[in-house]
Image (cartoon, rainbow, N blue to C red; front, top):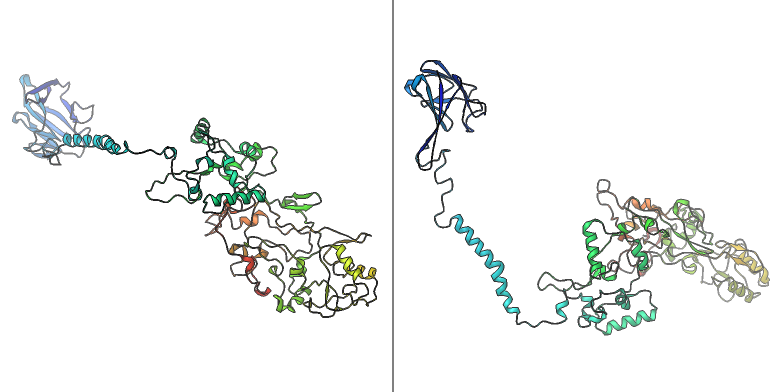
Length: 618
């Protein structure tokens, strides 16, 4: 028997459209797949849902291809044998197959979509949709309302608000300003020519240096400070120096990275805003976005380059520079201290184990030994700030800001043990310190006047300086000047222990050179508590300076940068609270040999000096 598929669809008007198709065999596959003879485009139907087979004339068999059932006259089954003459109704998802007998023994398969129940769509959703239809504001009305509101807000409101400004008076100077001046420069508000010296030309460095140049003479700096104070400046005038000559900065600065940086540099050149000016970083007239916000205290700092950007590859851009590249903290070059010599200061890397030529004979190990002679002498001077073995703070005293140390003075720091007394008649007589000629003159003038300390071979008792006590020994009052001078400058004499002396007719000394700062291109802040003390609150000098084992004054007791890296630049995995490792910790742009300025600190030099047993060396 022949199977005929009749697909029935309805127009909007309700009329039916029937399309007939004669199937080639008496077996037809039903499903969603494209290979099915009876294809049902419904997701509720499997790709091959069931198979319809003509078994005998007037009867067909339906078998499900899987476990999915289908409907037969309201019952869901997976296999059925139906009589075509009874017009069975087969349901697959939202589609209905109605079987009927046709002419010539044909079996008609009428395929149509299931009729939805009243008030529902074919998918079972209410006819009005899940969301009730708006009765007042439909989507069209909402769209028109929002469109007209946007036009009124973005066009009509600005036009109406601008009407009040049409009659406003425009200040000729104010219309060029992008914002107020900082508080430090507010006194120049009505003196634009102080900075803008030429129309339509960016502020030049000459305008800034007229007040802030740190390389002026003291008289010029005093005059500049007086001038700005009279003009109404509320702050003390600050003086700065150039980081380097402008030409070298331009050659040493790398080109901008990325498209944005290059585009910004192009626009700056196009609008006559040259780079590497004072005003490139220190920006004035910065607008205040918050109403009523006071002006900035100082010009806004806007860095154009970081330290690492310039000091990475610097040796390639400046072939003649003596600086070493410092691309990161981990690759920071080792220290190059400046050592004094016959031709001035010379920078030498610590990796070459340089020697210091101070001109003195001073073994640190002897003075810091807790069981040596200096320790026993210090124990007898308890009333003079000692009382125990010597420590670093016994001789090294902090300067005013506590960052470094004041220069060593023999009379203040050494004379408690190393006496300069040479005679006791009529009171203790002290040798002048510093000029060998004055020492010889003093001894010659005292020739034959009384006992001379230093002409003999014994030292005086410690702590008796200036007290009028007798020396431990000396020549008689009639000793010759040659003997007296020879004793002072000879072995065990007052000068021989600490100075290198050449016994020539002119009595020549090795010059004493004690630099105030070996690392003149950086600054180490000794006032930081972690630099001064260890976790137990004890002086931490030995952590960086191996003075206790130094047996010669030529030992350069400076740590390497690896010592700094034990605390600075560490990851949080190694140290829960790592110390900062930015360049500004030790350097600043306008003064590379000093750290970036911080708030003022107390005067460390005014603090009382504790006893050696409890000293805390800054």
